[in-house]
Amino acid sequence: MKELKLMVDIDNVDLRLDYFLALNTPLSRSNIQKLIKDGSITVNGKRSKNAYKTAINDEIKILYEENIISDLKPNDVPLNIIYEDDDLLIINKQKNLVVHPAPGNYDNTIVNGLLYRSKQLSDINGYFRPGIVHRIDKDTSGLLVVAKNNDAHIKLAEQLKDKTMYRKYYALVKGVISNNEGVINAPIGRSIKDRQKMCVTEKNSKEAITEFKVLERYQNSTLLDIKLLTGRTHQIRVHMSYINHPVLNDSKYGGPIFDETGQYLHAYYLSFIHPSTLKRIEFKTDIPEYMKEYIKENGGKYE
Image (cartoon, rainbow, N blue to C red; front, side, top):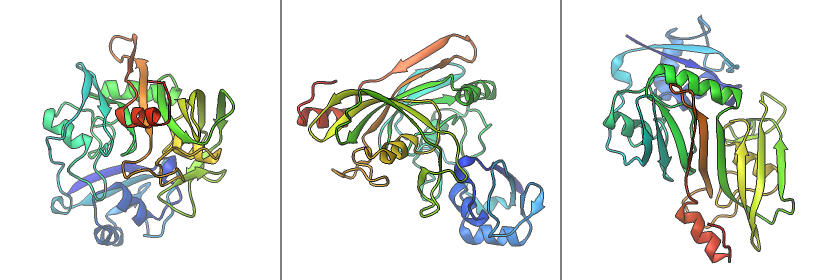
């Protein structure tokens, strides 16, 4: 028998237990329901039911036979690694690339690519997320830090929590924003209408703060420089939709659609204290080509 442990975070509260596990493990729905019935899945040390609603910081343990979960497979996934040392590496993630294995995609993720290169990765975030300190949406491009050992992972995660890891994004959004800068302070939680989406809500939510500055205005859109002061799931996409300026090409949150490549959002800047040298380091990338093409087509000059 093997054991898998999961901790419920703010983005996964108030979900049926079987649905939460289907979203966050490679187990099939039928396997999950059988394991719950057999008492092989516990919540905070107690047997539970399929319909149990998850709460923040619930500790879920799963005992399972090896043959019902496939091992993670190293795959030669192309990774644009722009920096690497003994503690960490920085990836400039391309669009259409999932960060870690999840239902529907277990083989062609950043994690599979990392395992192909090296097995020296932190294991704090669980079996299916080795090295992963924070995530970027599948169709968001940009910078991602990966921890190669547990000490580095702990120190990087603390900076995320303490808001001393700085992350900035380029975003193309619908409409012309008149203010040169602004702050969106609105709590984010999971939508009760669509569990695949997040929304601004007071129920089961957590503080979310986004700062933005206007870089360039076009006829029907605006290029923004966005700084995250918190790191909620889909935060920028939710907040921009909330103020009626959804990210372009974001079908999930109401952005105008131009093609099938996903939202026009790029994590261009990342800065943190190095876990070993204790010196602040920073990384920056250019606006990606897919955004440059839109800017040029709309008479913009920003590059």
